[in-house]
Length: 207
Ligand SMILES: CCCCCCCCCCCC(=O)SCCNC(=O)CCNC(=O)[C@H](O)C(C)(C)COP(=O)(O)OP(=O)(O)OC[C@H]1O[C@@H](n2cnc3c(N)ncnc32)[C@H](O)[C@@H]1OP(=O)(O)O
View 1 (cartoon, helix red, strand yellow):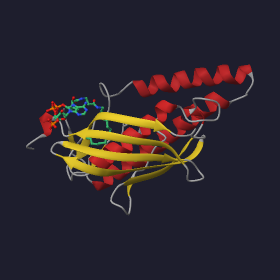
View 2 (tube, protein in one colour; view 1 turned 45 degrees about the horizontal axis):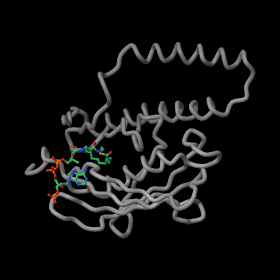
View 3 (cartoon, helix red, strand yellow; view 1 turned 45 degrees about the vertical axis):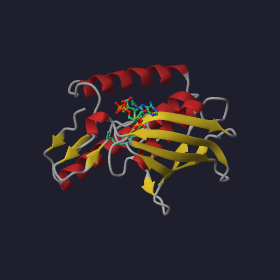
């Protein structure tokens, strides 16, 4: 795995965040309205053409493959393509994950129409996606741990809207970090609980 270092200072980092964050926010809004718009046919056809045009312009210069995990020369980690929290990823809700008082990780976010499974409810795979990320981050505060096994119990449906995710380390056994996590609905009910084994991969041991 490669972790490129970009030769940029704090000002340039802030400039890029201010440039690409709003682009992703706008596209996220576009995804939502693509699902929900009831505009007339001409408006939809015109929108599709205009979006094709601007997509073509953005495609003129782009990186190969995914964005990856990059660092600035001062050690700031940029996971901007991450499917859950990536600053440049319009598919990401995006989650801002913070350290909780118990030492674990916590995030409050909103899941709208783009994350629907059963009517009005969050897709089960999206619940897994979010819990994988938050549990993975709880396991990876010191070293990068990858998901080995993630087990989920869907206790009750998760309505679209405000959602909370929490995760904390249960125990560490050698290279294995055992993490527990939960999703909560807006009323504070646990909707999904997770147990995960996160593993410091062989390539990262001894680093
Ligand atoms: C990155 C920066 C970003 C940092 C940012 C972090 C946040 C991101 C969070 C996102 C999390 C993800 O989506 S990660 C992406 C999804 N996960 C993956 O793609 C992982 C794919 N699998 C692998 O790469 C590998 O199989 C590993 C790393 C899981 C394990 O390989 P390994 O390192 O060679 O492991 P190995 O030496 O054989 O075994 C070590 C110990 O782990 C146990 N073990 C091995 N595999 C498993 C398993 N699947 N489930 C349970 N336990 C297992 C063994 O029995 C052994 O236990 P013992 O004998 O010691 O008792």
